[in-house]
Image 1 (cartoon, helix red, strand yellow):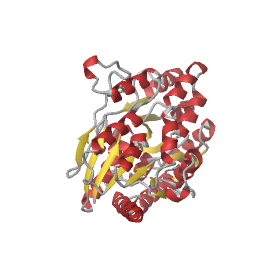
Image 2 (cartoon, one colour; image 1 turned 30 degrees about the horizontal axis):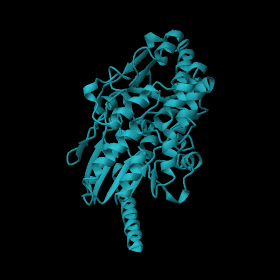
Image 3 (spheres, one colour; image 1 turned 30 degrees about the vertical axis):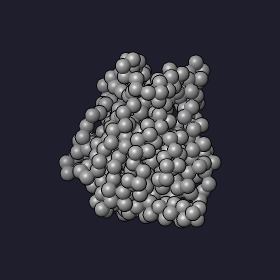
Image 4 (cartoon, helix red, strand yellow; image 1 turned 90 degrees about the vertical axis):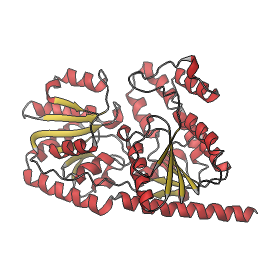
Length: 415
């Protein structure tokens, strides 16, 4: 099959969308398919055989100058104007503007692809691509309605209006999602939430879980006593890092512990302010900008890891930590219980946002080396059994064939 893969932002270390794009595209090529990726900034890291078409935006959120004011000579068309005006009114324009640019590009590629796969954009331009005659399939990792609810609940009164505006793109995504004929998602939890929050017909949804790359393996070196690892891909309440920091601060009063946060957080954010307020700055290390091999070393160096999120559509870091044989304390939130299993063999599950319960669970696991060892083994075995990118690619290719066949049958009936 000839596959056009659409993703409005795709850098692997900015979240699950980029990881999904990279590994799925690679495995589809391994199966003999042709994959061309269309992506906005930040651009993806892709493997040999996958073609990248850059779809440049004004890159308004790039580092080190997010929310920047572009120079007049940077404006190319009315889509650029819309992008800036949306940012100026506190909105997030990228899903809509990327989809419009992608639709414009695909007008010149009619007949070149068997299917178009949209990775979480769910923009109005994707419907325009379908109208050009392309079979369309969409992956929604989870509905961003959850991010919106959690951010609104934690936002101070003065910021609630701007927070609502930021998530204004959700109105478009809900409207578009209802018109899609095939949606892939990554967990049963996300499936239920998409049905509830987006009003999607359950019959168009299919669950295909994510995979874990083979580089994630148990360590050969001894684990560092007292080291706890957590992933913080965003300085946002949904990741539950504040709960972990408060629990860690309490544990530090009686134990010699170190917390390593693998993160893209920027200096001066709410997480760093809370660390300073709790007086634990000397015992918290931020790790960023590392390779996959270095990430594996970090994950495997910890006595235990913690995933304190208030919601996750899948939680790929959880599965990667399991692949490294690292024992876990995780929130009973979103799809996390699906990833680790409910029986407690691979992780201790706690109530999201409960500092006391998290503190007690970490302490109990730190005091039980035999349980940590058994938990690490069980987690590794579960990943090997359930989470393979090769299997993800085969299931996704089967979904493509289903969509292509349905599209052909519809066209034959209309003719």
